[in-house]
Structure formats: structure tokens, C-alpha cells
Length: 252
Image (spheres, rainbow, N blue to C red):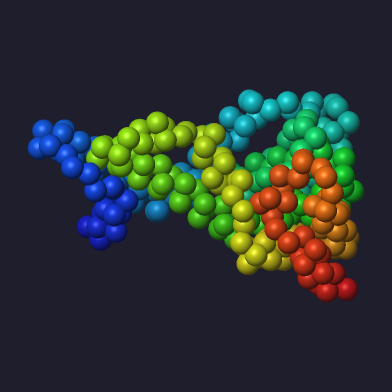
């Protein structure tokens, strides 16, 4: 239930605009409803978050060039994830996108997507490190927080539009914009370290080479210093050199 305190907290999100009494009467209900939506996004259940993530994954998959199960990428992905199908009670599902971009992402429903550019660059255990890192963001709650902020922002934009702010189109951002806000925003260094630590445990529990975390980050650091433009993962996961050194100390 949306509390009075939550509504008062969210009221500053509505711009101060001069509304005539008829306009105010017309839009007040919409504005208050959108404020309640923003407050509700803050307290989304796990099931709600997974449902949003599932829809995001479905939309991304529909717009991507997917590697077929029997393709070289599909067969390699199936082999290297054979013992990586569950983490912390969350069932994991994998697909490979056929694109030269060096990138990967995980969503709150356990959907993990690897780009063929990253698979071309990395060894099997290095890919497993990336998987462990990405699912670490989910398990640590980083993805949840981003989803809540993104959904709350969308509801706040609806409130702004209802109050005369002209943001109606932005309020209909839907899943594509939600994906950008949840997946493609830069992580903090603290979040990166937490996800890296999870990746090390992910590798250890499955008997994989922990040094793969170091070599994967070293490859990304070299890529960051080059002219390649296909390094989206680096734009959201900063400081690979410093992180490689930190992982080297853990792997020793």
C-alpha cells in the first residue's frame, strides 16, 4: 500500500506548473495515480521483478540475431554452461547473440545473454567468469535496484505529464528503454568488486580456473586501450586493470 510518506516523498518529482482549475481537476487523479505507481515500483516483489525481466529478455531475443543451438556458438555455449544452470536457487538460461560487440548481460529472471564478439575474444573459463560476474549483479541486488529506479522514474514521468510537464512520450518508454536503464548504465566500483567476488566463488564452486578472471579482465583492459568500438561491456563495467590486479591477489 502506498503510504502518505511515500506520496509526499515523490511529490517533488512533479514539476511546478501553472494549471487552470479545470486542468487541475482533470489531471490530479492521473498525477496521484502515477505517484502511487512510482511508490509501488520501490516495493516490487521478486515475482514482479522476474516477470519484468522475462518480458525484457523476450523482447531483446526477438530483436536479436540468435545463434542456433546447433551452430558453433550454440554448441560451445551449451558445453561451457553444462554445470552452470543454477545459482543461488535461480535457474539460469542462456542464449548467444550474433554480433561483434563485446558484451554480455544477465537479468533478474536468470536470463544470461552472451554476444559472439565476447565469445570470440575469450576462453571457456573466461566466459564463465563473465557469467559469474553478471549473475553476481543479480544476486547482490544491483539489478533489482536499477529496475526499481527505472520503473519509478517511468511512473514519475507519467506524473509529470499528468501535471502538464509534456513527458507523456517518455512515460511510454516500455521495455526497450527499461533495458537501457537497467543493463546499460555504468556500475559503481563497489558493485563491480562485489560482482567480481561472486564470480570468483562461482568459478571455485564448479572447479574452474579462477585465474580466468584475471586474464579476462586483462583482455578487456587491452581492448579498452585500442581503437575498437565494440566494447559496450567496458562502458558499463569500469576499471578492468585495477580489477584484474584485485582478482590476481584472490586467485593466488
